[in-house]
Image 1 (cartoon, rainbow, N blue to C red):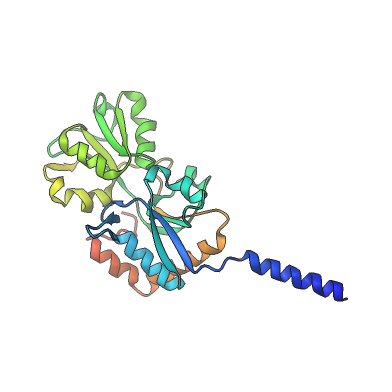
Image 2: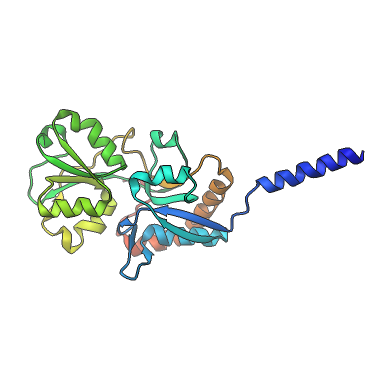
Length: 258
């Protein structure tokens, strides 16, 4: 009986040791995507995603630590345990689900093209043939453009981050850029550097490549952390925190489908 009791005690201890007590959550983020995430002049990470994550961490009673990461390597670095979650306007797609898991939806993720104001360009392969379109490396917009436009004569130019896309668009090295509509509206078109540019055509839709909403990326083995995140998300919707933060950055409802 003593041997049995000892075995049971050891088994319980081993099970307890396997369950991680989350006191600090490290967050991978590409800080080149205002108003969702960017670096302030004082070196602080700022933006809607940052404030949203602070609220989630407060609900979970954990410390948040942000770790900068270029977007094209953001999923491999999560899998390599450089950080614990991704909160960086990460779109949910079936291809990404093969590598990592996701929280419940954070907000919607429409994609749309930008070009010079008055440009006749449309987000179609026929209209863009022979043109240069900028995209962020590793983004769903890059996946869409390379799948549907590049094979038909459109030059797709990937950049390490979104700021580089806008820089070359402004100097005329690109004819257009394809990116998240919400980010482009508040982070480019409504800023001084977006002067002279406008939407070119309607929203681009494709569930296979563009996906259907943003969420938090989590390693598949971290189911307990995912559950904590989903509980915290439900709490900030229920107590009005999400709406309050949303109104600080956007003049539209970014959570509901449009």
